[in-house]
Amino acid sequence: MVRGKHRLSLQTNKMDNYAVPRQSGGPQQRVVMGVQGQKMEQDPPHDSCLSEMMAAIHDLEGSLEPRLDAVAVDVALLRADLKKVSKKVTTVKTDIAHLQSTSKTLADQV
Image 1 (cartoon, helix red, strand yellow):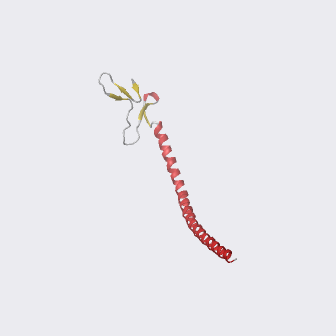
Image 2 (cartoon, rainbow, N blue to C red; image 1 turned 60 degrees about the horizontal axis):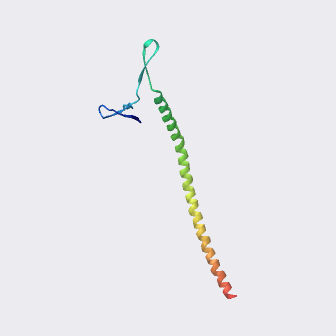
């Protein structure tokens, strides 16, 4: 019975792996028979796609770094503005409390 990439061998009771492991140490080459039986080496197609994707990711990282720096500056400016607004809100709350106590005092006098 076949499930996934493994097959149970009835004779040896061992698992056989159908997947061919990729060897580490760089991109693999495959030999292709060329014109008139000459051997040619060719990169597997997925390696070229992978290198193109890695180059695109590197380009995106390079273009995003200045944008991230600009966002960090904007965040710092917004935090400073938020502190100023917070101080003003505290001042307004204090003024409101003072006006309420003054109006209560005036109401008591009338």
